[in-house]
Amino acid sequence: TQLLEQSPQFLSIQEGENLTVYCNSSSVFSSLQWYRQEPGEGPVLLVTVVTGGEVKKLKRLTFQFGDARKDSSLHITAAQPGDTGLYLCAGLANAGGTSYGKLTFGQGTILTVHP
Amino acid sequence: DAGVIQSPRHEVTEMGQEVTLRCKPISGHNSLFWYRQTMMRGLELLIYFNNNVPIDDSGMPEDRFSAKMPNASFSTLKIQPSEPRDSAVYFCASTKREGFGEQFFGPGTRLTVL
Image 1 (cartoon, one colour):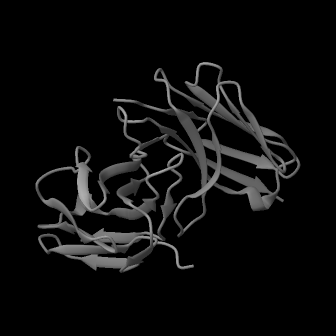
Image 2 (tube, helix red, strand yellow; image 1 turned 135 degrees about the vertical axis):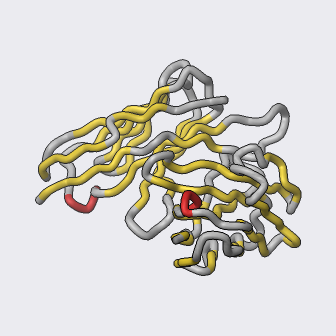
């Protein structure tokens, strides 16, 4: 069974601060996705990282995939109240030669950004 | 384009009753997933289908849970009999078979079993 450990579970910061969320596993994933979920809604995909060492930027959000494709991080610069939400990492593992797209989700990080 | 549609959005029922949750995936998506989300356990995969065929149901908690996908545009998750510990938000998601498995989630059904 592949597991993803996400930390921290809770993060409460002031507007303008920087933060990093970590996602770690002992398993190798073919790719890793980050989702954001707002109350009363389903998760929405932010980014997919595929190559070991890959770095992707989405405005103030920077995503990195570890060289061994076992871990990932999400860094937010100058957080804003609109960044508040639940952030989930999810690892994608191919099942043999197929690509059914089964995701293993981390427990999530609840981020609160205070004005 | 319409996203994943789930119904009902909220369901309150009494212990022992049958509950049926419904999902309409995005047209053209070949894979469908049922998840359960709780504060304690996070987002758990219950079962997923590919081309209407159940591929992995190892996440289904017990025999009280069953899921069907009679055609490409409709799936149900049934709990019979329901128990208070089944209270959770149940999400349906769909994805194209090709690609990197980006999943599109519905708004969820919040189930409360009294």
